[in-house]
Length: 313
Figure 1: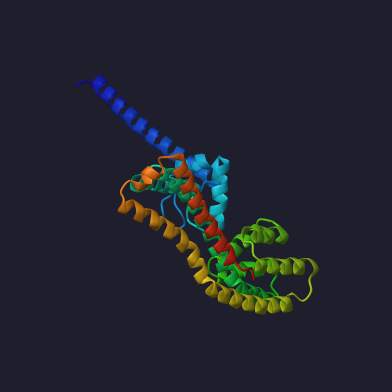
Figure 2 (figure 1 turned 45 degrees about the horizontal axis):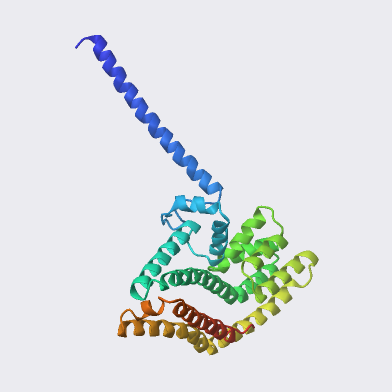
């Protein structure tokens, strides 16, 4: 093999190596750029803080551009769940499709869309329940928040420093929420805006009282230490009262969920004792109307029982 052939072969190998390295460098840079765009645009990293891989990133990016996606993201941010809007939407869609198919095959095809709507309602109810659960947990930590702020203020620390110290001392959800407030204050937001956003994100009477006390003390000064210590005792009393009320109303709340389950059990019993009975009943408009009326009455009963078991403290 002569020298020109070797030279051409070496040049070919060199060009191929450079081409592969260039393609690899381009792909790596493109992936880094996309990760940076996702992080800056609020779509989140590909991994969570605990190292869990984010799923359905493409669905999440497309969903965030819609009003539905933004609404889901706001609700999820208030619940503290480690889920993106795309993940939640995909999981709910899978559950709705599964309920639709199960109800259509076990009961009758007429119950498929109804089961799908029930699945969507359960998803909304789950988000509201998680949000209320987080609010309750935050309310239970409010006495400790007020006590830490009072001690820090009595030691001569500024309100911004006191909030940052309380965020480090407390566990979730109070620690996470106060850490977010402290970060906003560090970025230059006013105390009124940061605390006002906290009260909007986790609405409760106790938190509104605490936020009002801190905002007024920050504006006008005064005896903030004594006010916070008096507020601590008040919050402790309200915490015990809420716990007693929740215990007394637990049976009422259990009844609200038992009533619809009895209706579902009766449908399964009728269909199992006489196979195809629900299909024949829902085969006529009159039967469909009667089924919808009965389901509506069960829904009204659930709402009424829940209202009777809800007492504002």
